[in-house]
Length: 142
Image (cartoon, rainbow, N blue to C red; front, side, top):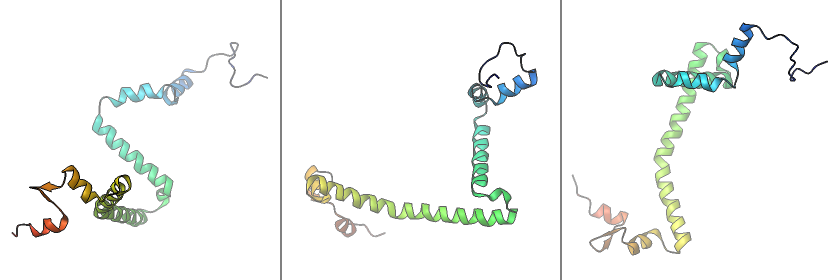
């Protein structure tokens, strides 16, 4: 008995339909076909990619078996949670990043970031160091 993976020269060639299916769906020939299709329609590619990702999302989390109203509720929940996470990231991340960079400066130099900034001339304004308190004092009322 011959293995499926070994070639046999005695066997007749596969039908043309089978060759076409192998050429069309084989991973070896897919990149060339994908490149040929890819270069022409960038907007179509983008929307096809979005539809593919939404399909993967539906299949992964089981939304494809839900009714349209159930999908609406589930997608609304996901959008609300993701928007709250994005809002929290934009609201709290800059101050957290500033605080952690200040701690890094302190760990590396042994001085606070205000002292290092003043020593390097980064935070100077006419010889006076700029601090958040002094910025509030010098703010021009509108």
